[in-house]
Image 1: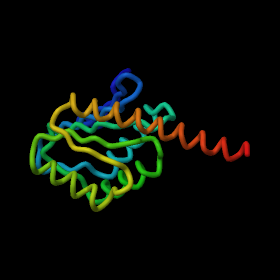
Image 2: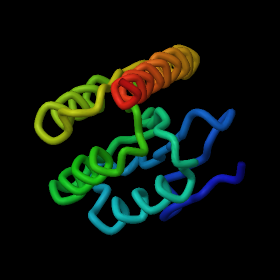
Image 3: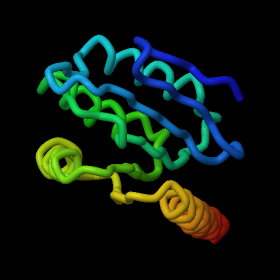
Length: 151
């Protein structure tokens, strides 16, 4: 699938029809992901999603900046309410970005499960395993609902 690029620094694409990937490249420590870019990111997530919740890998290994408070609020509220993301996985290679993600998750986004990795390979394995578990859980819940209706 083709990549969707936002503001030259953010790329989105779907791999193997099962994992949404996001690559953010920003080596300017003074630059923030702002509200407008966050809105554009959410629109692309909706566009690329197939209607089934899927994991997202957000690659922050080439990031030195941060995000605005408004963008953090928007992303956390909208992603959780969209029901398009089953889990969030962050790729990091610096302590500062790792701490930023942990703070963001603790303050803004508490409902979605998340994981932080340094390796893309481990992140993909986690996503595929999580998605398999997630789909089994959904099927199990649907089976219970159907069973209760039949009774």
